[in-house]
Amino acid sequence: EAKKEAAAAPKKDEAKAETKAEAPKKSESKAEVNVAPVATGERVTREVRLTSMRERIAERLKGSQNTAAMLTTFNEIDMTPMINLREKYKVQFAKKHGVKLGFMSPFAKACALALQDVPVVNASWGQGVIEYHDFVDISVAVSTPKGLVVPVLRDVQSMNLAQIEKKIEDFGTRAKDGKITIPEMTGGTFTISNGGTFGSWMGTPIINPPQSAILGMHAIKRKPWVVDDEIVVRDIMAVALTYDHRLIDGRDAVTFLVKVKNLIEDPARIILDLA
Image (cartoon, rainbow, N blue to C red; front, top):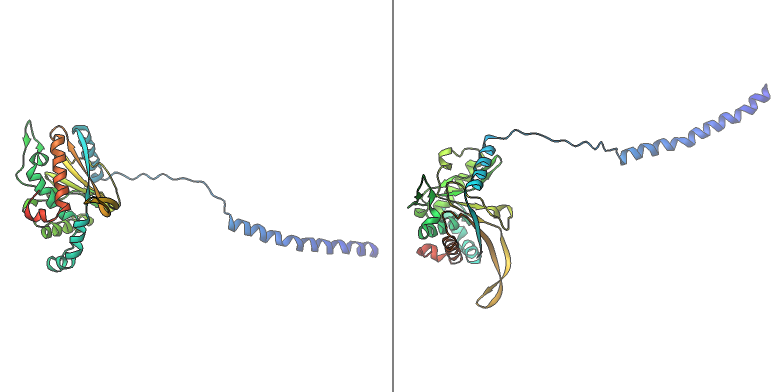
């Protein structure tokens, strides 16, 4: 029996040795789990109830597409003179008026002058009539967390750049807080949308009924440009005018857009009212 116990003893030692040898495998297995977790592959779809604002936007935009005979004409504007003007006077402008000089105010003023020269672009559909307006009320598209709102600048033909900038700044601040009122978004004879603030290079905006046209501004790009028969680098913005072809002929639409282009490329023309 003693011999049998002696013979069995090495087997116990061998078993302990095997157990010790297997121990590292547990740590290796644990490390593998930490490095490469098993993916569940679960995909989730969330449903969020439409807000009344989003439903209203959808109804108006689709209604515009279903009603108007929309056509878009394009052009490019050399923004270099306007950029130089802003750089030269931006400090003095902000100091005197308490607001920054942007690009929206020159465009709004240029559109107001051009609309007075081409009044059909400022017109709208009525009940069996065409309504021509002797004032220019420009809707400006403002993006908010809840959607797009279009408050109206009233009587832009009588406003200066500082007044326009102050009103736009006020709209932007109150729009973020949801404090734009319905009367402030009612009316408007023309709309300006600036997709360039989000980097858009080109787009075809949709008319805001019962208006007959909308101007789309876009991002400014540095491009080779011919000036006095020489190729130079200039700051160029693509612009788009979508109009209702039932009311506005192509000639009038193009004439309007070229007038806006001329005013922006030579800002002195805005001061002199030379659309």
